[in-house]
Image (cartoon, rainbow, N blue to C red; front, side):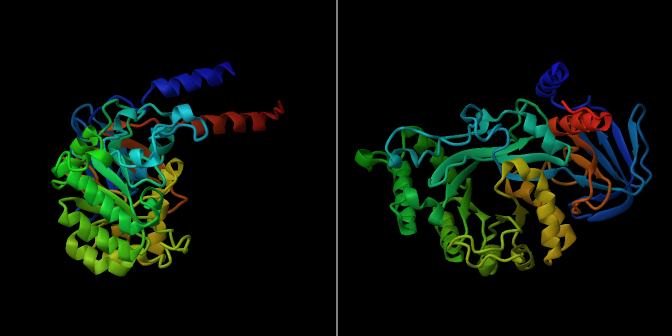
Length: 417
């Protein structure tokens, strides 16, 4: 019991990273997720936490650690999706949950709080992060969680390396529920969502215009103002007709829309491509779980990709975000090209959330978020053999592996207590 307590303390206090140093990964099958595509028997040189060079027969600087890949795959660090990781530690323990705003005011007064930003509440030392890191997830986008709300608040992309300043610059995002997901906060009609959003916009642009029944607080007006000038707004919306209207609505009012969910996005794939609107989806969503998803299908990602829509993958369960590569593998099984599937969990989400200049690819100048795999990274039997975040080697141990080893040892020794 004493050893277990000491282990828990160590995991909480240590970010899980070894000291930064120069690294040369030699002879890898490098999946760059960039214009260079896949490079066979290539080398990647990392210096000062960034990728310094990609090529053949690179020389190792003095003192550099050399990793002999022997043809194994090397990819960028993976995107964990839109998540509440670091905001939710134990699902049934309220004191560890910071993703949702719960106020005692009347319902309509707390459904429109764009100023609610979960980023400062992110726990970069969450014990859950190590579980994700050792399976290749190096970053994700944290978002507020509020079923039944419309404008639910802000979040940002974060690195999972344990640093306190985890939020990535330029990634601030506003999150909105639309369609039936917002019925409870819009009088039971999606038509009212447009009406109320326009009221909120008017409150921003014409202060005092609806003071008696205002949707927004002064801080909310200030927060929303920035998103009406080209800011990134993620709309959680499923139905094709809603997607079509939301894109037109958002663009006409100065927002830069991103579709999340998008079960029926394939229906309006051409329109999304023409408008340059990306879609973040779950490739395993193929059942009509509600009336907004009647057209859900396994080849949604394939159809969107063929139309030229930028796609990324995410799922709803934060504690399983490490399975994002399994989503990518399933998308390949249903017709999406392998390289496009890898991009959907690396470079595409980096571009969508405004961090593509620094993350998501293996090319000179990028942050050295890298994963060396035992085999095809989109196969469920493959494991991450080593992960680096910003050039730092991640400890390939987590609370789960420690518990596994502890109880396996007891089983082997025949202990019964």
